[in-house]
Length: 367
Image 1 (cartoon, one colour):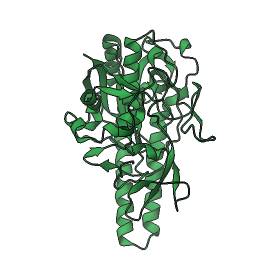
Image 2 (cartoon, rainbow, N blue to C red; image 1 turned 90 degrees about the vertical axis):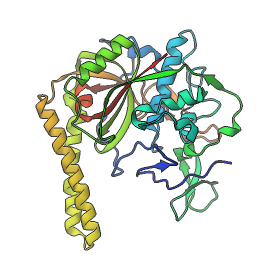
Image 3 (cartoon, rainbow, N blue to C red; image 1 turned 90 degrees about the horizontal axis):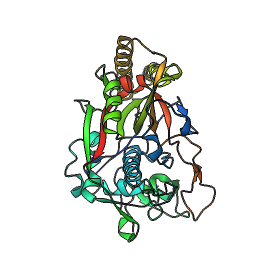
Image 4 (cartoon, helix red, strand yellow; image 1 turned 120 degrees about the vertical axis):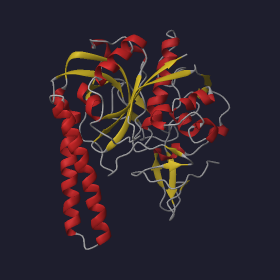
């Protein structure tokens, strides 16, 4: 049987046990800006030597699993780098189970070296020393339902008010899996920047040389860099494997769309505060509006101080969102119609994205 999980909200903060695990929007609105997708990675210029070892991720949909998608992707990257002769095909010998890390993160003994989950969660892999292949423990879809207390349970299609989706991956069924385990190297981490406030939604706080720091780390240590950032009030985790100083930044869509979003959202919340007859709701709307206004002001101050959009310079980023062209992922082989293209292996994120929207930047190497 699956374990029961407590107090889960798809569009809110999730905290199971003592470990924070959601990559979500504070307001349940998906980000509108879509970064450029690279269909043929052979055409990439700049620093691109880490790109060939990237494996695509299943689209996370609304699972809120970006942290574990990015870390599993980094573990896959290292296995591919250490074993260049092995196939990198989907569901092959290097395609690890994202669900494994999702479930392992909720085991208390695996959290012993995770002081700050935003920078230290790779230590969960060090605690287990292994992962599972995706073909043996896939990132999947299934039936679940929520009770009146907000608790989530596995369900059947015939259950009243049951829903079907990727949320089922948060339920731990590891004890049922006996084959498909893969030994992992021992990972080390170098925190390039960490928000002292440990706020995954923070913006406009990076040191002015953060782009150069990351570029230098990629070139010198030849290891992926995990980044947590805020885009349009949605915190997300990805990893960086390269860069190109000369490629167009497409008018800095990440930063520009976030500025617009913060403006529009604080106006919307202020309007709702004016319309409601509830004092409690009015205070809450105004509080949220203030948060968005402060984020907008911090972001604008940082952006303007750096000279705005420079027009060129991008990072090569592996994401777990958007649909790419690296094949189709089947979430449930017992059903048809739930297939979806893998997320892109490489997307282009402007340098300004890192400068102004990132809040935790960690390079992950091996011993």
